Image (cartoon, rainbow, N blue to C red; front, side, top):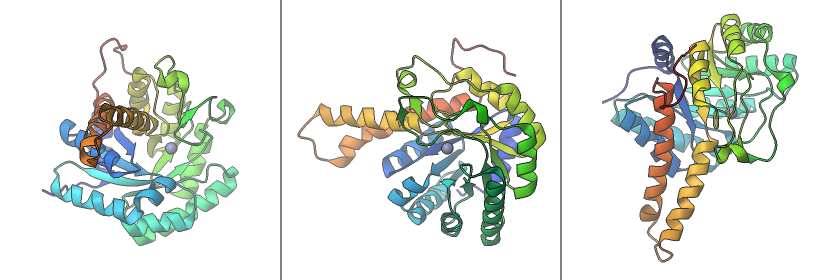
Length: 301
Ligand SMILES: [Zn+2]
């Protein structure tokens, strides 16, 4: 069975349902298998993401080809995004490889330069295929989906609704990634479950109204469950989870290797790793589609 739905259709449908599309980064085939398995188990659509570093390791065309074959076999919409693309050349590489979405990221540049370079990249990828969705980013949410010692990003650089409106109008992006209290990576205290990220929910609502496009939330790992639900209610359409998958990948790989020091069969060592990452992806997907875990506050803004 082939899914005929476009990424734009799926985002519009989920918005009506009060849900968000889960975006999960993959750097290898183990992570890829885990995300697909979670989508199959939950019967929910997924957006597979790969940053420039992840694409370099996996192969941009190879990843796009895997997503395509998987999409042809499954009845669940599966899409692929070129996450954090920092050059026109890399945006074109992803567009030509068949990515459904390109995350154009010139957010480290001054606003006017970010506008100019994002607009140029949007025009270039739409010339390859007008159906490709273009994402643009403003604000500072730090770099690196890793374990950090200190907080990333700068609270003073949260996106304002006026900036969001100007940026969308000038660049013609389909999806905006704002800075709303989110940050890339996780602190050690977050990995241990002792601390959580908190989002500026009213600001998300104001940005949504001003921008009038789909909104994506980067750096979702370690965010309070109820904040995710409230963020979706305020207008977030896509949520990025990467570090939580990386943590599960490493921990389960260590455990699997330690279980039998004489084991050398890769698929025997790696099968539990796929399972562990699948569990993380599945629980996030269920949350993004309305299942609030027991104990969480019931009301959704
Ligand atoms: Zn990101």
